[in-house]
Image: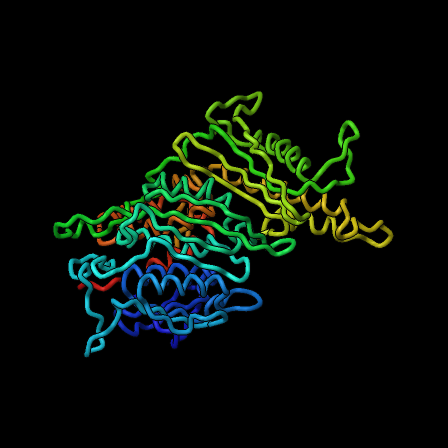
Length: 494
């Protein structure tokens, strides 16, 4: 349903503005998560559907500076270039952006003419007139996340990429690979990419040229993405039941399976800590992170229900723990941990932690009072910048990562279920999906795209959602669902 920003609206309630037109969508950028994800998804779907979109109050829920950041503006610029769209107010700091694909141009009556595919009841832009290059380059001036830019471009390039007449489209992005509040290169390579392929999307690959960090001395990194497009549509007339070229994904059709292996990735410096090892040898941040992550993970795994493991045992945990070679970083604040569970059904469940990026974790907040607040007469805590302070920060980070990982692996059954209006529906056999909570929000767009034009499968998907435990949906997941509903489910019939 199209919306207008001039009418009163509660961003948290999901109430709608009165419609302005049937083709131009207006979104309140403060809705739900109210950050850059809303903008990225809205503009990507605008390019895919040929429907113009305006986002007001861009990143309106963000503390500090709101409006488009450099990474958002770069994604908007390249998406407009590839799709031939026009952009109004797409500069850094803009609080209102309008994205108008060429298919959204209006006729004399002010109505948007249907595209070739839309006239066949398929709400995706026609490939007939598109020109796609085999290589695109984006260079940020600050280490904004290259993977958030990729998120904006990926669905559109899957659809139009075959027009490049190459096996894959290469997108080179210079920016950040390990930064706060964004996916890391390691998470995308080890969790996101394999899960996308497992769910039926064309595989994509990456080459890490250099890491870019937001911590320590700011450094720029570079990643080369190789995106295989969806197969060319068949030449015969498209039937309504084949409305979408994207694979159908009903996430609850997939089982998590049993955990048969856990891999551990650690990036850390070789700085020496004051704590001595068992034999008196010096302990580095890297060696401490390795030893403590393994020790605490083994202990935490014993709290899980053994039935979720491939080889359950009452006496010990038999899941292999594979530690990859630790990558040595060049600064004391550049510490990163990724834990990934490999399941018998081929999915990856991951959880990571970056030093200094709490992202609302519980244990860090609880330890804040323990380690940083002291009563009168007590000795002060570790001096900031000392090896003792570094040890404590890394220790807390390990706890956060292990705790979050165990939460991702835990399964619940027959839990009280709350519907979308907030009312209880009683006890129902709901369960979490086969994905971790951060991966879950990445797949929402593809769920919606795979069901385009097929009312039967849309109904099936909605029925499957009723069996999914919504307590594991993040605010990003709910935001993605809201944007998809506005941009896709309310596409006007032609």
